Amino acid sequence: MKAASQRVRQAARVINKAEAARLVQDQDCVYIAGSGGGHGVPEAFIDALRDRFDETGSPQQLKVVGTVSIGDWESTGFNKLADPKLVRRIVASGLNNCPMLGELAVADEIEAYTMPQGALAQLCREMAGGRPGLVTKTGLHTFVDPRQAGGRQSPRSKEDLVKLLEIEGEEFLFYRSFPIDVAVIRGTVADERGNISMEDEAFLGETLAIAAASRLRGGIVIAQVQRLAAAGSINPREVKVPGTLVDYIVVAPDQRQTYQTAYNPAYAGKLRVPESEIPSIPFDIRKVIARRAAMELFPGAVVNLGIGVSNGVATVAAEEGFYRDVTLTNEQGIIGGLPAVGKDAGAGINYDMLAQQPDQFDMYDGGILDIAFLSSAEVDQHGNVNVSRFGKTIIGPGGFINISQGARKVVFSGTMTTGGLQIGPDGKGSLVLEREGKVGKWVQQVQQITFNGKYARERGQEVMFVTDRAVFALTDEGVELIEVAPGISMERDVLDQLAFPVRVSPNLKLMDARLFRPERMQLAGEFHRKSAPSATKSH
Image (cartoon, rainbow, N blue to C red):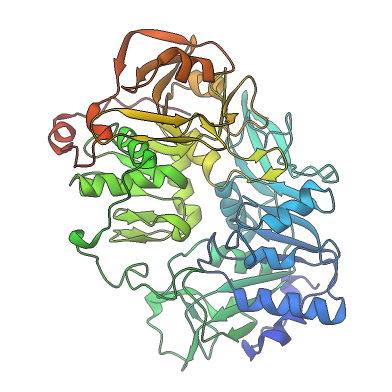
């Protein structure tokens, strides 16, 4: 395509989704905005692109990029693009929402790279500014580091997208810029000049940066919106992408806020949910884990909550009456309030601010997080954690790497085994293990290093592991058992389930019996008596 300086600027044209799909040419790099479970995803365009391919066999050999894994874990989003003739390469922070693409990567039918979500979001901004790439410490000593896998998830992925740099004696990773031929973004309203607002969206992302990065290299920008407005009728403070960056507009009146939710005004920040209407989570083993993790909170803490069981920490804090005394955040941009759970994770309610995603990750990388609650799907003897790939299943890191490397303290959560596990609270103050899982998650060596325990300790991070039946800490000597649930055998149910020996603390404690009872734990008093730990720099 022509360089941006050679293009004649024309007003944005309104076209239908089929016409938009026909703008994509063979071998184009297509950057599609949006997040996870349909947040800000231009689904109508994705539908039309797949329809065109099915009808005509074109376009072919696309390079598709998305900052966040996009799909409903089954058939929407990037799942619709799962054909090796249509897509040659996928680059995203995850493939968990789009397992159909992940299957092609495992079969080595496409090139596949999974990169840190924050690095991709920030890279868009670097590309928008015409810079050669992103320089950051994020990803060092993980599978993204070129000394390990360089983010590759299939053997045919040969190109180096990440390089190792040394600047004034310190190591950094360099994520290379790349040209975007077609950027596809989504908003709520477009006016006649092409200005785009996002007032009904649950997510802002890096929409502006994606559009600007495409235009810089002469690419085109397609904006999917729900409705049109007269020129000048959008409040200028609500315009998130200026019309000068937009070439084409596709109107999709039925676009949903997320795949699961048609529209929730609380997600858009237009309504605050009364605390009495915030639902509790079921009293099961996931709540036990979330409760124990929540006991690590302290007044004024700035917190990130990952997906999965860690989501429950927010609900526990609300149930116990102190969620407003900490600042809960998620990587998609929620600051304050309560991040959404389940398939709407990424949205939030009652928040103080909805930040653009690159800005949120700037703060994370800069050390704003006091504590992060994240999943731990595999843990090894060195305190390494894998959440990105298991056998033939590609998950990707999402925001995990930025968050886990940026927070002063990390609390990893999850069950110790999986596959048929039946375990839960007895409602009286103990744990009942009815059937052990078939697969142990505490292994000699993780398949991929998404979190490097040694690197964390070198940088002074505090690391804990909260499981269904025990609590561990990562020390300079290795993993240490510090708490065991009442009602189980430490030897049989904990130590024998580990693929490596651990040190048992001389001050070993029983986990709090209140964790295993259905009534509220009454944690507010203990919470308010805590003081913030002294800050330690983890970079």
